[in-house]
Image 1 (cartoon, rainbow, N blue to C red):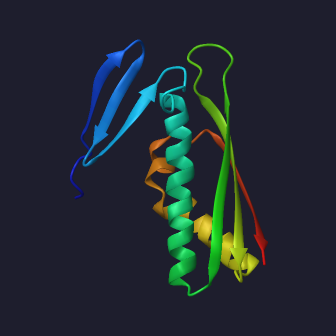
Image 2 (image 1 turned 60 degrees about the horizontal axis):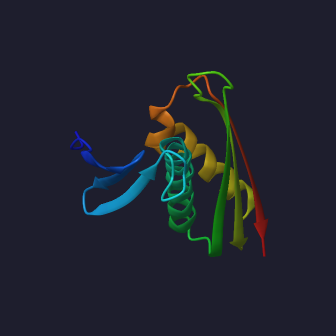
Amino acid sequence: MKPPITATLTWQGDLRFAARAGATETILDSDGAAGPSPVQAVALALAGCMAIDVADIVTKGRHAFTALEATIVGQRREEPPRRFVGFTLHFTIAGTVPDHVMERAIQLSRDKYCSVWHSLRQDLSFETSFEVRP
């Protein structure tokens, strides 16, 4: 079993916290000015988890790429709790990566590897898309 994740948040004033996990630190800020808000951090974590998986799977498949960008849009409820109700995640990759390789990498991340996705409510709408640029 993997060891638990430990994080410490230290109040910095207003609605800002220094967030430390392991050797890294960032700021969580309610209004997203000094750092991402907690809700933005969730969206970043999902996009980051999937992007890391896709990059790893494509690289292990020995397909060359020179750039990879992931853009996520999270839809939220209007009323509290303003939880996410859906995500759209789009990947743009530059290089010689066949479409079927990207499709498989995204599907593997979503179905098997992305621990962030599997930690969220599974009733969320989640659409993915990609484009390959030479």
